Length: 339
Image (cartoon, rainbow, N blue to C red; front, side, top):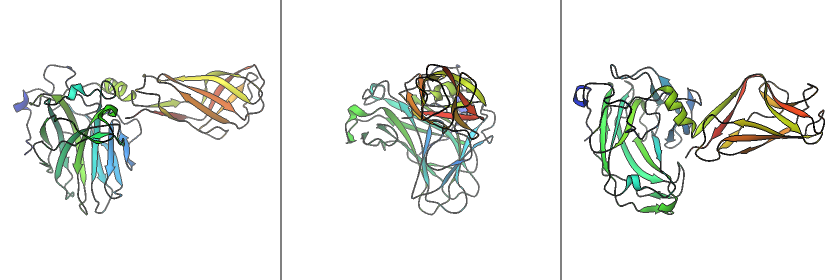
């Protein structure tokens, strides 16, 4: 059975011993929400946390200031079905391996302890919270290990904040699909919900550490957590105006404009950028004479450090002249290198 431990039992401070790197989870205090709050659906919504709805449940994610008192937390995640009964959802996070196929830090026999602060809303029916761990090749990868069920069982959520603690002993990993040579992360899968039970939870202070005893939550600054999150996902906000130089190869093709990422990515990310054009919030090119080129299209090429932008199908520019990318209104690009 899971056990709630209060501050006194854990040493009497919000963070005993300062930063030690003992918490393997990124954004465990739910501080970073680069994609925005109030988002619905599945996949990554909270940075480094992804949602698996059951049977089409529509899940909403809000950042909340409802937190356990006196423990140094400022935010929690409020995750729920907006109105009516649902079939539950799983809220998961993962820890990147040092290299693909190298899961030695989670070798057979390694003791792990997962702790989390959690509560349910008063109106919620569902009360079980049961985390599993397993190795996987990303969130939806086909190469995964046999799931681990040897924890302390399901915890029971109440209307009050409590700290649940679950212990694991890493098994002899067995591939349930594909090959263990392809796994790249350890997943913590928070199992919640069942058919026709409305679910409404608050969660913060998630920590995974090596050992068999939960220590006080390791608080990190927002700036620290943001940089850790940006290894996997980054929004590039661009204000109205000029923001990167390039060169016109021909009268219709421009290349050489580069946007540098703030943090080197885990892998070359998938880029989502504003459309080309002249409407508000779109990107285009401006020639050396200062005139806005007419509508074209963009080709994006990414590396772990930057994205290169090429424009084609433009007119009103001169070959060989310098040019600049222009944002016609405030907008943003998104670089996604999530596991």
